[in-house]
Length: 35
View 1 (cartoon, helix red, strand yellow):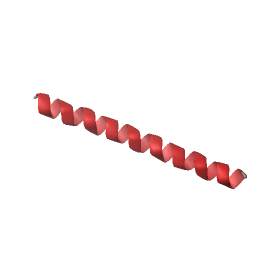
View 2 (cartoon, rainbow, N blue to C red):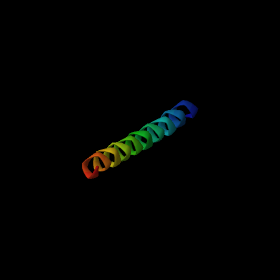
View 3 (spheres, helix red, strand yellow):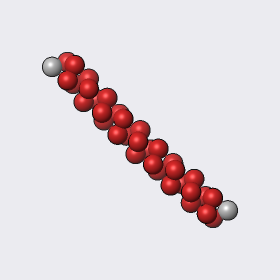
View 4 (cartoon, rainbow, N blue to C red):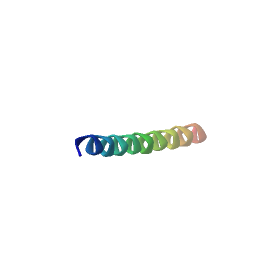
């Protein structure tokens, strides 16, 4: 049970990191486009 919970938390953290990374990439692309 504990291990499964840990894996679930890790997957949530990973998805959040991927989401943040995608947002940063979009912002950088927008900044380059504007510049």
